[in-house]
Structures are given as structure tokens and as C-alpha cells.
Amino acid sequence: MLTMPIPPHQRQPHWTPLTGLNALHRAWTQAALGKRSQPEVARFELNLGTALLQLQAELRSGNYRPSGYRSFVIHDPKRRLVSAAPFRDRVVHHALVQAIEPLFEKHFIEHSYANRIGKGTHKAIAQARQWQCEHAHVLQCDLRQFFPSVDHAVLLGALARRITCPRTLVLCATVLRSGVGVLDGEYTPISFPGDDLLAAARPRGLPIGNLTSQFWANVLLNELDQFVTAELGCAAYLRYVDDFLLFSDNKKQLWQWKAAIREKLNALRLSMHEASSTVYPVKNGIPWLGVRLLPQGVKLKTRNARAFSARLRDMQAAIAAGQMPLKEATWRINGWVAHAKQADSWALRRAIFEQALFIPPPQPTDEERDA
Image (cartoon, rainbow, N blue to C red; front, side):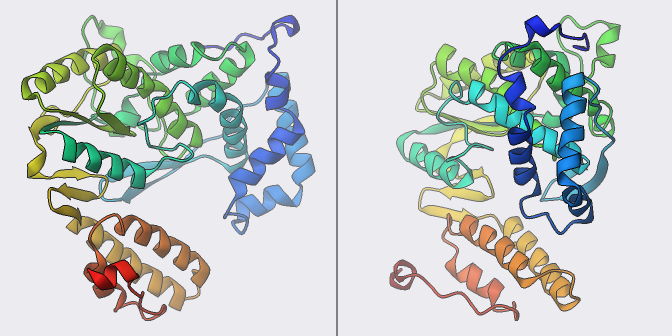
């Protein structure tokens, strides 16, 4: 791991801005967005100047050490272990990402849609829908236990290809090291070609919930993106986190691409779900990001609607108990509605919201009235 002290003459110019008070204050603002009523965030804000100065001193002296995570399980719809870092560590995560993101963003492919400004699920669905209409077959892949599987040495190698500042790399390694063991219970060990007995002890895992984990997932999987688009020459490829689609009219070519992707993933110490990563005709419908892309239109997945209905009931109960402000419930509801509108879901949305007594029923758009 990168733990050596860095002599002053080796410090790179962007380390000072990264740890400057302006950058840390901006990072605090981002980390606290929508969370300032939480006790931990409020305590940090109560002595904000002192807290930021202390954080700056620890970072610049090399004495910064992240604290432990608080973990909990969610089902959305898959079971996931989410690990929340203490708030002061989240401030550091934001400062780090805002400093290094520009080094990588310009090298990401156009059709990588997760956790990027101007991208997102809606555009990923629209692009997949467009390519579905233009091609006969699709190779759909998803990675096996992606966040628990991420190998720290491989990720640090990808980071070092763009980050020239040693102290920034040390901070990346420090944040990475704080997540060692957090996801061990979620990972089933596998062997890769050339592994020895010590391979099982390699540090791995990105805690789900960290801003750094979301960004570093794109950094690592950009290695795959570049391989598929530049070396395999697939022009109709898109990825959202660890799910990706390749479109072609040549079914045999897609199977060949799957074999090549398997080898590339081995080099990254990652693997795909072999059974579910398969080639099939686009006319069969493509399950993608909570919807199903069909030749005749886009349908919302049944489990997505059921999960939202359950969350809606929970929100009603929380509002009745005074545990959730209506404004927060409205924000959450609007987020789901925006997603559901990507599908032909007007009747379904109306049926769901007719049961929601704390908000007026939604009104159809002119387009939906005419449908």
C-alpha cells in the first residue's frame, strides 16, 4: 500500500487546492446537501470552521485516518449491504472526487451512464431503446459481486495512470484501505489464472454508499469500456455501473465478444454471471434498469412497481407518525415518477397513487390523454 511520506519537492500543484479551505468547504456543502438535519451533520456544522481546519491539518500532515463504517442491509430489489462512512470522512470523499474527477471524466466513453453529470438511467434507457430498434441481437452482461470483488491493487493501478500527485494517491490508498473487510461476508472467493495461495488475501472491496466507490467503479470499468469500444470495435455498447449491453446483427460475433470480455475481466480480477450474461434476439425484450424494452414499447417491471408501492405505504406511515416531512416524501415520489415515465405506465401510476391519501392524484399530460 502507498503509505510513504512525500517530500515537499515532490508535491504536485493540485494537492494544495484539494486540501484548501475553499475546497473543503465546498466538499462539506455537497456532503451535507439534504442531510443538515441529521445529528451527525448538525454537530459538524455547529463548529464548522474548527472542524474544517482540523480536517485540513490532518490531511496536510499525513495524519488523516478514516473511522469505521456503519453497515445496514437494503433490498432494492436485490439484497445489498450498504456501508455509511462517518460524516467527516464523507467530506474528505467529496473533496477527493472533486479534485480527481476532471482527470478521468474526459477519458470516459460517451455511453457510460452511471454517476456522471448529464447521464443517468433515463438516458441509458433511451439509448438502449434506440439500439434495440437498429440491431437484431444483444449481449447482456452483469458482473458477479462487483463492489465486493474490486481488487485494490488493480484499482490503484488504474488511478495511478491518471493521477501524478503522490500525496493524492496516498489519500486514495488510505480511503481504499478503510474499506478492507467491510464486504468480506458478501464475497465468494474465486481463482483467476495464475493465482497462488496468497491471492485469497489480496485486499478487495468498495463499500457501497461511498461517493468514492461510485466514482472509482467508473474508473476501473473504463478499462472494460475502452476494451469493448476500441479493441473489439463494438459501436453499440453502453454500461450502467456493472450492467452492460452490446448490440449487433451478428449473433456469432456477440458470442465471440463475450469470450473476449471474459478474458479482459480476468485481467481486472472481475467475473461475470455466466448464466445470465447471454446473447438473445432484441425482439424478446430487454430487461434494463427497472424496465423491459419491448418491440412495441417500454414496460415497467412488476417488481419495481410493487417495491415502490411498499415504499409509498411506508412513507404514508412515517408522515402520519411525524417521522417524515411531506417535502421529503414528495421528493422521493417525484424521483420514482420520473423513472416510471420512461415506460408506458400512466394507468399503473394512477392505480398506485389512488391509494396515496396524503397527496392529490396525478394528472395526465396532454400526450397521455391523447394515447
